[in-house]
Image 1 (cartoon, one colour):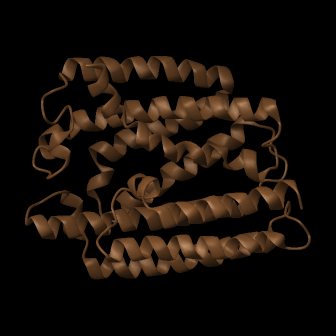
Image 2 (image 1 turned 90 degrees about the horizontal axis):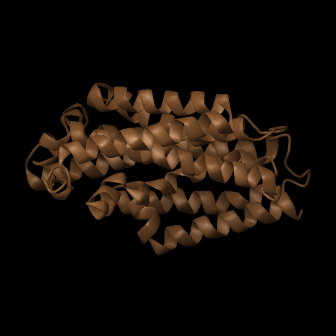
Length: 288
C-alpha cells in the first residue's frame, strides 16, 4: 500500500519544484543558510501539495486512464490502490502541508492555495479547453517561482525571470501536447479529449513562436537585469539555453518527447546542458 501511494504521489515530479529556488539563486542568497533552509522547506511543502494534487487527479481521471496505453497501469486506474486510501492520503498531505506553509509565511500559503485551487479547476474543466490548458500548465511553474520570492527578502529580483519562466514552461507544455498527439495517432484511439482541438501543424507553429520568444527574452535578461555583473558575463549562459531548447525540439520531432521530467531525468545531452548552465550561473553570480 505504501509503495502504491508513493508511486501515485509522483516523486519524480518533485523535480519541478526546483523553480522555487529561482529567487534564492538569482537574488544571490544561495549562500545565506537561513534563506536556503527556508526555501528548501518551501520546496518540500510544495512537493506535498503537488502530490495531493496528483492523487486527486488520478482519482478524477481513473476511468479515462484505463483507456490510456500507459496510464492504465497507474495504481488507482488499475484498481490496485483503493479509492478510500487514496482520498485519505491526499487529505492528510494537505492537512500537513497547508499549516506548515502558513508557519513559513502567510503569503507563501496564499500562493500554495492558488496553486491547489487552480489545479483542481484544471483537473475538472480547464484541461479540456485547447490553448487554455497549456497556459494554465505554464502558470504552475510561474507560481513556483513567485512562491520562492515570498520566502526570502528579495531585493533585486528581475521581472524578466517571470517572463522567461512562463515562456519556457509554455514551450515545454506545447512539446508535451505534441508528443501526446503523436502517441494518440500511433495507438489509433483517444488519449486526451483536449487533443481533438490540436493538430501537429498547429502545435509546431506554436512551439516555433514560443521557443524563439523564449530565447529572445532570456537573452534580454542576461544584459538588462539590474543585479547582473556590469561585464555582461551572464551572456555566457545563452549557448547552453540555446542547446537545451534545440535538444528538446530534436527529441519531440524525433518522437522521443514526452513528460518533461522524464526527458530531463533520462537524456544525457540535455542533462549536460543543464549542468553546464548551472555551473556558469553560479560562477557569474557568486564569483564574477
